[in-house]
Image (cartoon, rainbow, N blue to C red; front, side, top):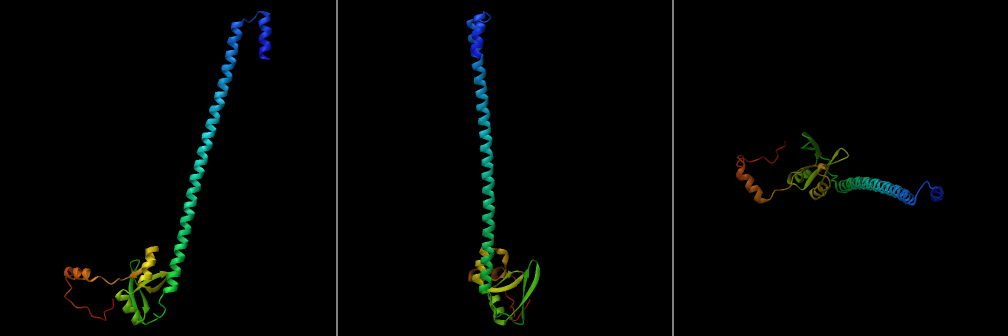
Length: 184
C-alpha cells in the first residue's frame, strides 16, 4: 500500500524518484531496527531464562545434597544404634559403681567386677544410646567413634609400652605405687 501511495504521489508530481528511494531506505532502516530490537529482546529474554534455569538447577542441587546428607545422618544413627544394641554387655548389672566424666560432670554406672576390670584395662568402653549409658567392647566403640565421636563417652585404650615408659620418665609421681582397689 505504501508503494501504491508513493506511486500516486510520484504521478501527481509531489515526490520525485530520489525522495521515493530515500523514503524506502528509511522504511527499511526502521524495519531493520525493529527486527534488531526484537532480536535483542529475544536474546535478553533467553539470557534471563537461562539464568533462571541455572539458579533453579543450583537450588535443586543444593536441596539434593542436603537431602543426601540427612539420609546419610539417618543411616549413621541407625548403624550406631544397631552396633550398640547388638554388642552391649548385658551382664554388667553389678554393685560396683564405675565413675567417668561426661559433659564435665562425674557420672557413674553400676557394673560387675569383671566389667570394671575390663573397663579399666581398656577392653570395654562406655557409649550413650537414647540418653542411657551402655558398655560395649573397645573395637565396637572404635567403630562408633568413626561414625560419631560424641557417642563414645569413655574409652581407655591400653597404652603401648613405649608411651608408658615415656610417661613414667616425665611423671613426678611415678615412684609412688597405686593401690589396686583405688576407686575415684
